[in-house]
Image (tube, rainbow, N blue to C red; front, side, top):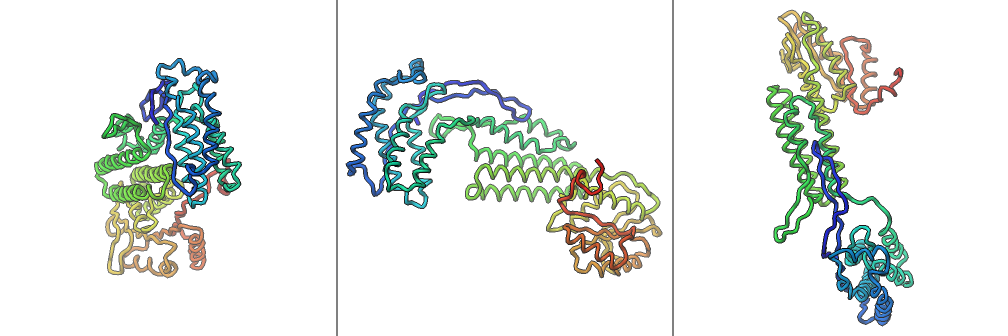
Length: 484
């Protein structure tokens, strides 16, 4: 399309982070241009019917060309534009007739193709674009309505054209002039950037210092072609690359801040998250061109970002949940207190999203360590006193000791372990205080725990704590026995 001029239609603004971007929206005045026919079995050069129709169309359109632009109020306004010259439309009748016959031939030759919709759609788009463009309020492109009317007539009167092809072309034409909300690429780009920013937990202390840097940026870029002076707005694909680069930059900054916390366990979790996030982003970028349309890509990318930043939030929450010892002189009571805190945060504060589904028990053990920072007790993991490693030992001196064991409901030896393993550990560590924590991840595993504890008559034991790690839990308003 040869753009002759751009006319400012209106001023608009869009929000991008903490910045308000003002911009003008322009409408095009573009001249019509000829198109070329495609080859196929049907050739208008040797078809008397096509040649006759071409001659008829040119004859019928001559009067319209003579009257243009005084043919209607909208087109008459073109006379006020300094860029308008009627001489630019002197060949409009022949060009329109060419486009009608070329389109008719293309439809006939491609209707039996396995990809006929794509082939016909592409040619229709090119033909429609070739009629040029008038600024908003100055009417539809000259003779575009005549082109549509003639093509409709030719294909609808031809019994050899499949009915589904006719329906498809007619529907394309019907939708062409339907009123629809104007696209606003600048507002769309800003919205996507803002949606991403809203996922980032800048309220966390270690992210506050980088908040302004990211919120004062903008996704808007103007690209300059290498061989021309033509400029254009950043494309969808370029936006995806920008967002992914920003994500990686933010991850690096978050990592630097977390390392500053000097917390080995937090850093261990974060390292896993970064690796998962970058791996996902790279895989998605590799697949995008072949498998994902733009809208689906953005949706999946946003879901991944939301999941990632939710984990960062919960990681920080679990870091600050523990306080000083509640029972500084009783390792058993203190352990039971902290285990129940752990249970509450997994079941009701969504801390369970931190659990790696492929490494459940190691992940749970790492999370449990996070709530034992502020303690006067000796808290040790993987202690081995000759009868195999136990999960945790909480102690103060040689007298006050409590053993903590984690068990997954999926363990095939769950019943056997509950019967004997903890007793063995107690004897090996010279203590009679122990707590067993049982985790289940679905309804079937939950029922298994109930059944095993019933059989062992342990269901009411205080030192057995069950933690529900299922992801979908009823809301407080829907939970059985909840009070409104």
